Length: 107
Image (cartoon, rainbow, N blue to C red):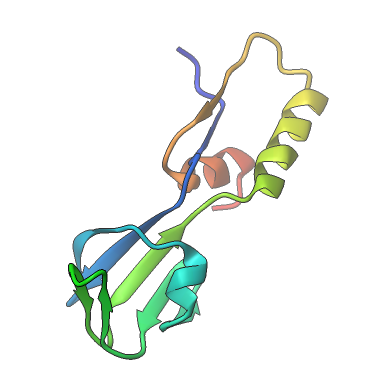
């Protein structure tokens, strides 16, 4: 099966503690912005100790990587695909935004 474009159909946030992946957390980028500061694209640093539903504890200094795709991005890709006259190709949604950037040649 040929893969043209890959986009997440949802958001996900990865928690890193002591510079190591710890777990996925169910937080949107907007939720993360309420207690963490943006340090570079996609990355946030926790500014104060935070508890999420009494299950996940974030310490000051922990890092979060938030990935999501906006409706605008999905619509733009659909337009680019249509304009490119790509015949017999597939638009697949996948959970790694990096594939999109590679396809567009931006990385």
